[in-house]
Image (cartoon, rainbow over all chains, first blue to last red; front, side, top):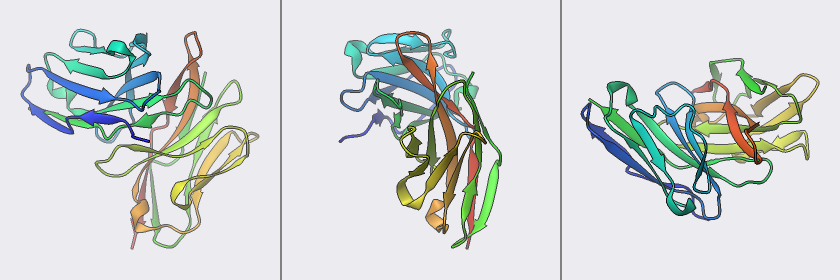
Length: 114
Length: 117
């Protein structure tokens, strides 16, 4: 079974530039999550999709971050404009809708904002 | 409300000695609990999961965890540490969110496991 795919793996941009990350979840997983992980910390949930609808985006900085999941499969996360504090690893995860609701993670995208 | 507390931010053991990473949880109902591992510059990997089928759960790479309801604990153990076990370990509980049977993961702060040669 193929895992969660993410691209790019690494990205370096200057502040105020824009960037986009892509995620392809495990086939059949209805739920998709984007997390931000700052060095030395645990993952922070940014947004949760159920199929192509948003379940929770309460921690997404909506003035600069946006995400979409068209057709309930792939998803993109965009930052525009980026700030220095956005430097982090962005993790995508997917999960099924059955107990115990575990999530499976992609390798992440390491973003450096200079 | 659900929460997770990892009692140690760092644990250092010698190679070949036992590993114990401690986790306490708070849940208003029978929880789903997980341990995830993150090796340096790698993604998060599911190590094991508790689903109430058995209190002693075996995971990958020789790790296991025991669910103790009376102590609200889910400690992770391994009989003999290996250098490749050096990583960050997260204890996680699954919690319902909103309506329509949606769930989210509540994360502990993580424990960094250091293996001494």
